[in-house]
Length: 252
Image (cartoon, rainbow, N blue to C red; front, side, top):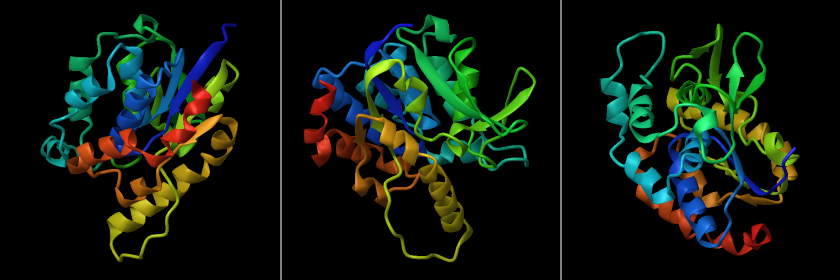
């Protein structure tokens, strides 16, 4: 089994993935180039685009025009809230690889199987279906059917997939998107749903944070939600300029 000098695990967090792109740009400039990557939900997109040979700036460009309105306009069915088609179209246009085997470096993508309740790691076969499954937030997006099973967001069981690459790497950097912060109660359905999802995704990340050599997570990101697409540039800059970057040295 091959051992990699460095692996990076990208956590889930919706629109907060722009922060990961900023962090990753800084890491690459410091010479931190992973030999293997893993990702959950939006983290799987960042990881896949890098494994496909794209820079963080190219990632930002690919998703530059994506807005909440795109998802709402595409909605037709009633069994989920918004359509995943805008994300799928971007992936189909941007990704050169169509299978995991065509990627430049190994990638592990985590999704949750509705039938078994287990987390499943995809690292072979069709790429885009696995990515869409990993990003399919329950109820918000429809489950993705793969080989007779239905899959939803990997964050339900493993939001920060360090453990899936830990044994393959000498060092692992984890980029999380769910820093802890108390928020004032708001009597509306969106607030309650977002907070409950945050609790769930954050709770199953503790063990994986302990497994990582370096965890990069900025508490200022707690001010943003998973749907704040209009703040993409602010989140990217926060990631790149994060005051915690002096702690990144162990990955060099």
